[in-house]
Image 1 (cartoon, rainbow, N blue to C red):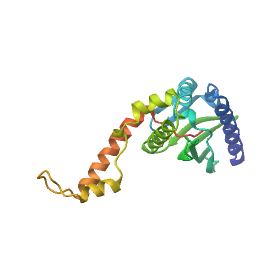
Image 2: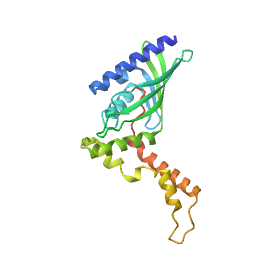
Image 3: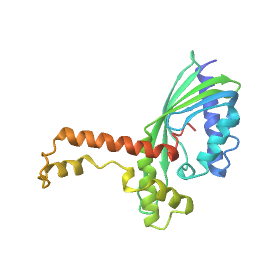
Image 4: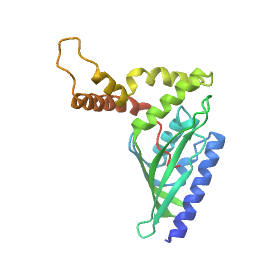
Length: 217
């Protein structure tokens, strides 16, 4: 196979994905893969075969936050024809929630081409905490502007609590500068960094069950 063939196959793949986005019907997504294909989604798990890929895609892309993404533009891509692979950066944007804010997060997608226009493997690599934070921020703004429907509000109620995001470093540094009034030793920068890392781990764990997938679509 040639680089041109792989590039053309992925362009056709991407065009069909645009159709799924437009119609909201993702049942045909798995048919872009071979029957024994493997889909590796670093936050959500590994799916083997068309049935598992189809169930995951339909479930994820027809509920918040996946269903709110209006497209998956590609920033760049490279092809390794000898290995039959295409690697690209996919942008996962969200629409204006009501105040003009534009939110997007990227992921790296690794596609393995099997020939005949089908792919045998996809792997999406991204930071689930960043995706969760984006979905959380979008839902809060949309709710403030009356643009959040029931599943967005339900997601926000479950995953949008203040405990879901780590405090900013600036806020932690300000807290560090304040004298202790409880008789305990003053906090150090190491204490702040440790607390922040712990908060980020907790937030990432909370995000995983409902995290939007990276878009190799």
